[in-house]
Length: 301
Image (cartoon, rainbow, N blue to C red; front, side):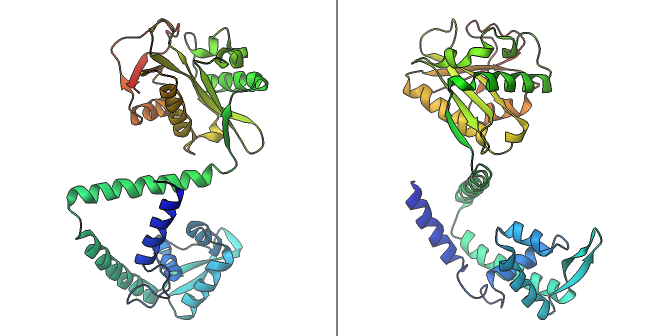
């Protein structure tokens, strides 16, 4: 699927779901009004909070909120945490409309799901979950760039590795003690290697990862190396993007397997590797010199 095909599919889904209509099926609520009622089900919220949740401008939520207020479906309350702000809350009538809305929309979805067997429903759930994750990560990654390591990155990258190693208390036998730590551009500036750096909107190097031939590992095996991420970078999906780009580059370079060593202290990284197909090994491969990393993993390319 390419960008144009995804846009076309998304448009079709929006139309089929009635999101361009002036009301939600038989319920006399606009789609935005319906979303506002559903968000208020979890508790009172300010106009700004509701606008943020719906990914709309504040003005595009304030008018529908006012209509709901005029119909007696919501009421405004003083915000106990900020006397200058007001919170919208559901009235009893609003709760009744919300129950009606849920019943009507659930019935619509039941008719859709009736067209699918159990296996197809699971595939649909997986696909929609992936799409939602991609949407969220694309939003949080705006302004960040991924590019090959440059000579000027040597100092910032070494500082990042030392910072993260101190955070996780990584000691002897980990890459923070590699003698070439302050000259990683020279290490990866080879035809059989690659290092990708992640650059923040303000120009700071905040993460990255690399591949290189596995020392003593034989032909066709590369090693995933020096995947480090600043705390400001985590949770944005950039680690997964860099990892997949590196694996694609490894395939293009003719590698057949990718090996890595890590430690249980880096639980988030280990979980990512497993999710991306790496399997834990019973013994080390090659001669990396990283005896402090007790977890060895590999995957076919």
